[in-house]
Amino acid sequence: MIKLSAISKNYHTDKVQTRALDNINLQVDAGEFVSIMGPSGCGKSTLLNIIGLLDRPASGQIEINGQLLGNYSDSQVAKLRNQTFGFIFQSFHLINELRVIDNVELPLLYRKMPATERRAKAKAALEKVGLTARMEHFPNQLSGGQQQRVAIARAMVGEPQILLADEPTGNLDSQMGAEVMSQLLALNQAGTTIVMVTHNEQEAKHSNRIVRVFDGQLVQ
Amino acid sequence: MIHHIFKLVWQRKSRHLLLSLEMLLAFLVVFVLCAVAGRYYQLYQLPTGLSHQFHWQVSIEGQDREELLQHEAAINSKTQLVDAGNIPVVEQYQRALQAIPGMKHVSFIDIPLYDMSRQSTTTQRSDTQQRLEVNVMNVSDGFFSSPNLRLVAGRGFNQTDNGAAHQPVVIDQRMAEQLFPGEDPIGKLLQEDSSTSMTSFQIVGVVEALRNQGELMTVSPTLITRFNSQSLPSILILQLADGTDRSIEQQIMQQLKQVRSDWRYTIEPLTQKRQSMLRTMMIPLILLAVLSAFLLSMVAFGLFGVLWQHTNARIPELGLRRAIGATAGNIYWQIIAEQLMLNLFAIAIALLLLVQLPLTGVLGNLMDWRLFLMASTAATLIICLISLVCALYPAWRASRLTPTEALHYE
Ligand SMILES: Nc1ncnc2c1ncn2[C@@H]1O[C@H](COP(=O)(O)OP(=O)(O)O)[C@@H](O)[C@H]1O
Ligand SMILES: [Mg+2]
Image 1: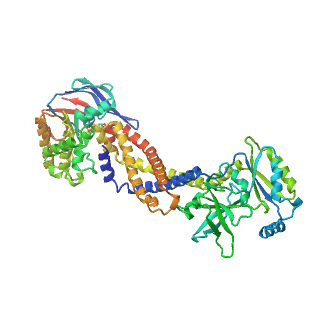
Image 2 (image 1 turned 90 degrees about the horizontal axis):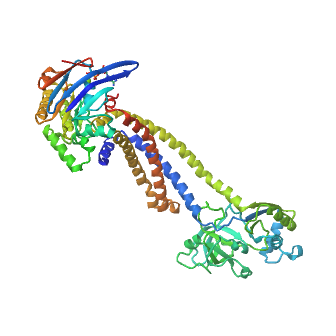
Image 3 (image 1 turned 180 degrees about the vertical axis):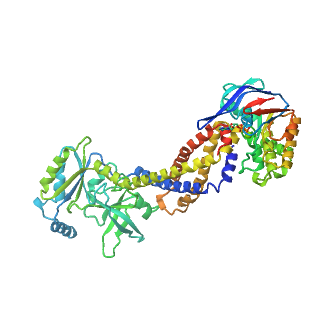
């Protein structure tokens, strides 16, 4: 489903060059639940962003569903982000000026879809994460765990094949984290491929496979 | 998407309050500018009753008081003034000037054309005593041969008016509408609004318009009285054959000096007078335009700064949008659309206030619906254009960031 070959990524800041990723080869199959672990600053987020096409590697190749991503145009990449991937971030990244339902609808705005269908899909997604009652609230009226569940609903509303989660429980206490984890597991059971960055060994145990990163390289 | 952008703008309304207020004020200023410019344009389109091409104006100065008084006394006592060879000075000028080849008409008036001066009086209908403040101008019979002074009813002055019981007058359409609505003014009597004066006037004709200051003069009711051929002339209007150039002025001067060499003459082509009058009348508009341009550039700088800050502050939001499927183009247009929408809010409020002007008619005929529509359309376009220009760069920059850069932007 996803195949990374010889991926490298450098960051340049004030004459200092950081090699964030160094010759990464990684394959994720359909239906897998992969956890990425490693110390802080080792390149986990960078790796996840490259998988999700939020960032471009300095070198190496990315294949998605057997398609090699070469010189894809901005709109082609945007379409993949919109339809193939769903993202969950540590800091939720909800838009505070929009109601919960509007936040969930957001990815569908970038598709051609009638407003009523969008609304129906957003409601269904909120129902799955158990937040139907909070539909008309604003994000800052919700707890952290609830906000992250809204983010999950937003990631899932477009029915992507692959869900990418960067420390989804990192800002949550253990009880809320457990709630979020159970949502992710349910989604994986329903067939969604998940790649998750985590610090939590307990959480990682739920996944099929753990990938460890150290200093920009994969370790076995 | 429009609905979505509307929601965002609406939710951020308090943050945008000052900005909207600024846009509202800027809109008001631009509206005033456009309304004044539009009003000038409307006036410019209206008939003046004046012709300027191949027309010259001669102003005579240096007549001494005594002579003037003599003439006035003669006119009042209705006796013929005995002058050189018994010919009135007006007649002498006529003859002398007609001798110039290409001279088509010579006429006499009492206030200069394409000039700031105007004279007014209050007149009243003899039958209803209804009064009206009017501009007055005194012209000789020949003035009606001016090609642009169009009669819409009746006639101009001619020899049959000599010794008439009532002094003949011609009025303009505006005066006819105001003093004789729905009536035929021809033959109606007017009198001067002073109990002592016994002079009464009879309307013999109606002209389309006569605005002595030219194109940019406001339209007000105008009364045209007949120049008495016994009086001393002060301003002459000469109509010459097409193609005549300024070299004729020397010849005109010679002929004038033949009549009275002790008087001073100023000869000027009307085309030139018209040009300089237009320039003079444009000064307030130009000042207003310069002030507005200055103000608008301040507004534009302010707007740019605020937009820059607002856009920067929401780059993480824009990054999120990129991450969930927005293209760079989507981001670019979103920022521009939000700014335009905010702008339209401000404009809508301003228009709600301004529409009271034509609705209540406080400005009378200064602002009609056409002018209002013209000014509000032009002002809306200008303000939207400024908004657009100020939003382009912040929008472009925000759309260039990669999603990761944007998501982690501080
Ligand atoms: N935008 C950036 N500019 C410069 N350096 C960066 C940037 N993002 C990440 N890095 C550096 O790249 C390395 C990997 O970062 P990251 O992938 O965020 O690590 P992790 O998510 O594993 O904590 C770190 O050394 C970090 O400092
Ligand atoms: Mg990270």
